[in-house]
Image (cartoon, rainbow, N blue to C red):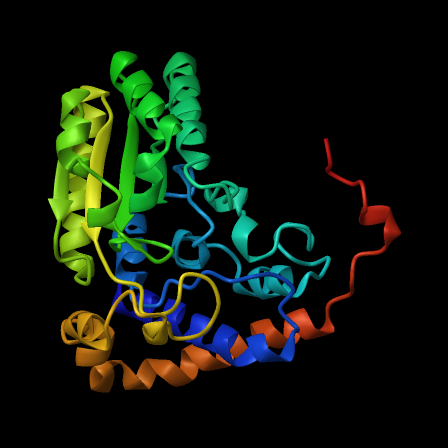
Length: 300
């Protein structure tokens, strides 16, 4: 899991290097600092299991098994991208491995996962259906509607909240009069908080337990996983100068970051991962642009 987390971080560090060149054709929402959530969750998933995630999707795309070359090509807007250059960073998809289309609209994938769980139940299928979203998404009406519907119809869906405590620049305490897990429990949904979101083993164990509960009961589950994004809300830069948080807050998370603490042990893996990234970037660079025949292809 640490190898997978390091791979995600190095991929996003390469995105940071490339972004000023304007070769990346869309805004990017980086998961640096949050990688262990994605790898801990996806460790329990198979390609048959469906995962729906938000615009901060690089980590889950890679942890679920999405192709790295196709990801970079998509960021470049090339026709060889996972969405043939139409989606960009905020709309990654890899349905062949169960990563369903990400969305830039806050909370919009939550009802998609609930709908998939309803379909699975009616069709007698046993794959998992997982919705991943940030703490800000829990303020949207569709979130509450989805929890109510999933509980009412006893749907096998797992809600995963990546709680970094921020919605752009607004702190959670200024936005929410409720606790995320307590609110879920009012709908009869089993809900737990994992405070050690930097620890992939603890995330994996908690998610695996939720999987077992979902399979045994056939009912929805919710995990709130506390984490920290090191970079700005959107873009490759730092955001300390914006004044809504301090470097000390981020440093407290970095002091527990296994990719920092285990850097020496992981050092031999870096060259292998960087070579893979080099090949993926070269694939994106050499790939063709979409031509006019792509303009309306796959558009409904």
